[in-house]
Length: 300
Image (tube, rainbow, N blue to C red; front, side):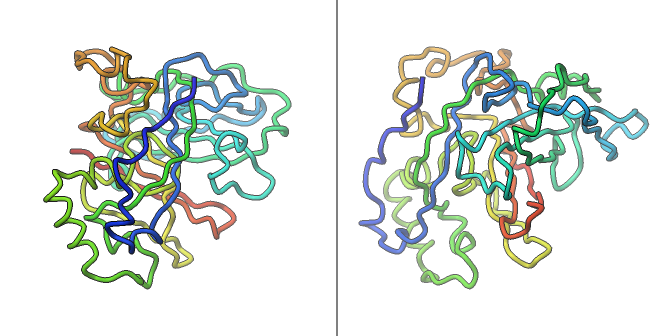
């Protein structure tokens, strides 16, 4: 079943015409519990990995320096047919995200990710099962390995968080310096409506704007260009459950009712908990052929 985000309660560009040129398209992935296969886009599902290629190992030190290296965990797989908004390099049509499930120091402050871009047709013999990771502690084992989820990609239009303006403009920024103040003032008079329901979508998504939990942290590529938001993996999929809760989930008690935090999927169907209900923000430079990766995690 697909997912449909309700329309915004008002057209914010009528109130602030300057925002019209800041609109960006994001793709909400809507992970829900399921049994995805190798040929599916998924979160927590099996990765289409060549049987003859070594599975990635984390060689970087983290909290338990004396421990042996750990195999990475497959997190996200996206086919171009499902999420064409991803900046696929030429001759690739499959994106894969893996991470070391143990906590690392900055900039990650949690699992350390890597990305792989490949051509699916070149995988003629797939790895049947990924090797088991090694965990530093029970927290990592419980909270940093996603439960299998199918995806329902849905494009939505976003606008930047007012605290990020003018940082979310291209450089040099063509927008009036007072735009952020005007939006923040309007938001204060409307019970936070802009931030809650009109700006950036919560949850796991591709592209668009980061829904920052703390201050914006935009990385700059080695080529000198500010990197684009590639995707967010979020601990909480539904935010305040206002506009961003899809129509199809509004009668689902597993989503709309209060659940015990002892349940792995209490916050989101994928069962991930990054820090204190945090989000992992990943960025790339679509100008550079190798698609360099940067990012950070923020939590409340």
